[in-house]
Length: 456
Image 1: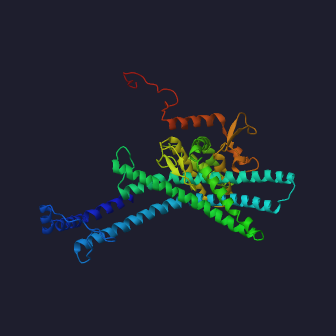
Image 2: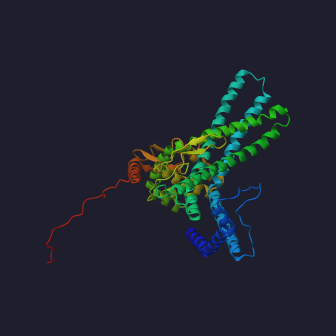
């Protein structure tokens, strides 16, 4: 589709090339008038008078002139084509990140509500006993940590979704603008255009994240305003401080997204090794009609297992090639790594999988399990090594608590894999990621030298 659009643009420009040549010829004739040539030959050129509000040297458009009319039609056609394709690129990017943006809005709303509730109780209990205040403060801090952890995971997911889709956006821009994002092959002007394009993509990321957080703030503030109807105006105005605190928290968490890529890549590679090793068990489990017992986690594991032969390629990080990106709410710059790494490629693969599965499970238990899994992937991962009843040795399976469950799930243990098999799969994936080649397993083929046996 993009190639077809590029051909259409080229054809449209070629058809009107002769019209541009005619306009250039007309302009040259105007500049070469006899009066002007005579003045230049005498060396007595009058001073140029600049009239405010009047642009000199720009001829008025004559719609009756077929040449100028052709140019007008060309500009209109190109403008319509470019605006339409740019809108299509932006709509596609917005569609890819819509679920992650909604999750971030809800997480910011939850954090704002927690802070507003704590502030409201403190306003009503100014004269409470010191022991009660201390105990209440501990509970409040625990609630804030949970809300902050949730917001961190949602912010990471949205930022990584935008970063992983950056290559699609760049490909669309390459067709429209003709600027190939290759610093080695590009000239000075193209490199400048690439930098401007990257800067615009960073601002678009900033706008998307800020909008999601501010939507959550607005929803929570509306509820908080109603709850403070009986308080003094000064205490109601303290909600502004909560907004500033939420936005400051968002800026602090945003700085850690690039640094968390290593942890996400390690945990995802481990999860992929487990899913590939347990691939046969997963298939049998689903065939027997038990796939719904795992909810969205079964969908996730099946999807990851299907990517067993996919090797992560080097990819750009959060800055899409830039060394710094604008912070969400402050005027500061956030430093990021501009180099291409396979760690970013692994994170992009994980982000694509989790975003696709999240779109298939928009609500209920499936959504809850996925959101908890996202939080665990930023810390210790979702796997555990333990004993399995009636089986010797160590086994690897999903950790129920890591995905938000209060205890073990028997279905997880039924899909456990031996530690040795898991480690072998993990070693193969790691070697493939590093570009190492393995010799074929098994004995060497047996061969007999000539002459060939005649068969008698």
